[in-house]
Length: 262
Image (cartoon, rainbow, N blue to C red; front, side, top):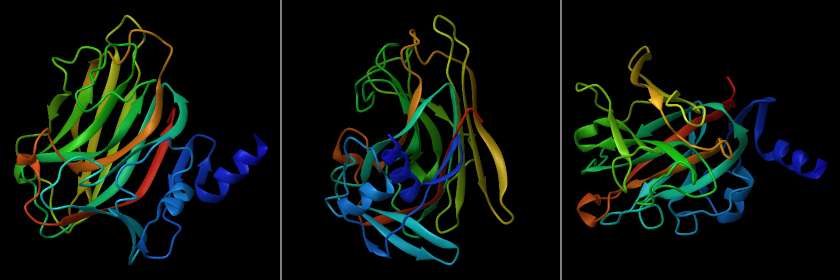
């Protein structure tokens, strides 16, 4: 166990006992699976890294993870990337990251952005949550840069996640940095008292706006699971290729950190 803790300290910055900061350590260029494992230790699977969709880029303020979205493709393996990074078990967690969309980003019908998840199963992609198998709370961009929270939870309406739209006038910009802050609080089993908050900060100077506030979430019906993963997944889609980008495009991610019980 001591060796494991030391290993994690080397590749992931532990700001405090309950905060994890993830930074690229490789020199700028394509990110191999071996390097990905060093930056994201403990993940059981990955999509899109071995296919060459992940790289490290140098920015004026440091390094960032760049994800390339393949023209004509959908899903994390063929279009972007995806994995679940373990963060330990927590009743409350807050995820923060900065995303920057390329200047010619193709929004099409929509796509996924990172969030938080928990439970023994990967509830996404049409595998619904039932209160015992887990939950997921990610973000999505939509047509013309609109935004929403995309959530798999016990009371979802169908096989696919429920959408909680950002304000009607919201649009993700291109080129400019966007800071995302998501907070999830688990419910007590049998009660609809879980919470989901999303804040977006952007502009010059950056101004934070609360875009999603849900205080009646029922993430689970048992206490066997809680928040346990940073769900780093981003791709175009959607269930068919009408969601696929018509041209190659990219986004950069930096400032990735998770605080548990903040």
